Image (cartoon, rainbow, N blue to C red; front, side, top):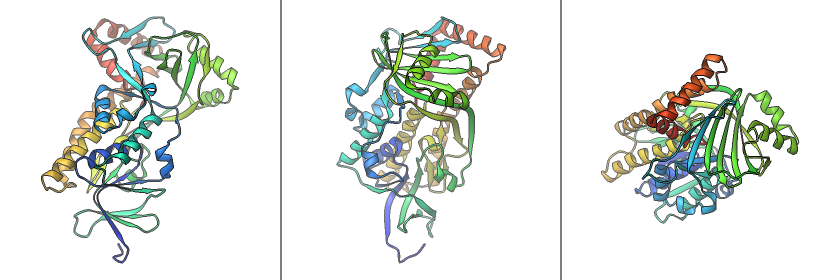
Amino acid sequence: MEGSTPTTRVDVAIVGAGPIGLCFANALSRRGVSALLIDRQARASLEAPESDGREIALTRASQQTLDALDVWPRIPADERAAMRAAKVFNGESLFAMQIAPRAGQDAELGCLVPNRAIRAAAYAALVDSPQAEVLWRCESEIETFAPSADDSGVEIRLAGGEIVEAALLVAADSRFSSTRRAMGIPAHTYQHGQHMLVCRMHHEQAHDFSAWEWFGHGQTLALLPVDTHCSSVVLTLPPAQMDALMALPQADFEAEITRRFEGRLGAMTRAAEARRYPLVSVYAERFVGPRQALLGDAAVGMHPVTAHGFNLGLEGVRRLAGLVGDARAAGQDIGAPRLLARYQRQQRLATGPLFAATLAIVGLYTDERPPARLLRKAVLRAGDAAWPVRRLIAGHLMRSAS
């Protein structure tokens, strides 16, 4: 690259200033590692993100990670909804498998927080951190990148001509990551042929802060508690049916959602704008390259029906930031092949079985043939009879909205 162009030097360049990218930069800064965040959004959009309708189910481990990064205390208490139990329904049956903590355990299975609130808190925690060594390149993107001449780093050219030298380049720019493609890393992509609707709805009857997962015929429904008379509805349908639903006038839309939930919580009225997303699962063939790494959805994009998405992303943040921080403390190369290979091995072990299990569950619960329906019923009955099965499904359910 041109030697006359001014060069910015940094330890780690991160593409994507979503909550995972922000938390990763925060974690690095606490280990004395400098970072540069590159994002197409304006800085004001990062500081005050708009609602995207999504609610994130956080595990206790994720809450602890966010607490250590000073993110959790910045999420207002009224934005946190406890999930005290879960119910799993199949088709029109009134039977529900009940999932609740065992005696002596914490009274909650998880906590539901709007994605917008997590993003805003992650940004504020990073900006306010006295340890933060972070540079920002907003409304920007990478034009090209290549190994440095002595192979000691990555030379990155940003749109506009600025050159950045980093010891490590990390892609955290979504499951549709353009950076991953530029790295030459293939990904297994699964188009599930359905769209997901998310919308907060008020309902006449109160509920007990149980999360519902309802595998109906031709649809999957979830009801995630927000308040006593308000829940986040998640509905998956084929695109044509979703088009028709989204085109309904508000009163007809509310009546249709009430019908799909069979009136189990009384009449339902819309509390926020409904949003839709295509259902796509992604698993990268590799999580690393020469002085390159994938993080969050850029590495693993989970299906929401049992998705661990954000929680797995935070596991990756802890894992990679820990390895990089340890290497820096020992005076070692933070982008060394051995370090990246260790990250890849650990993260694939943590995510691979869960990703495969999720695809299997999606296949079972979207198959409308009679044998599959019978198998679904048998699985739920067996799960209700055996605590280990209930516990396994609870682990999936309590991370399913991410």
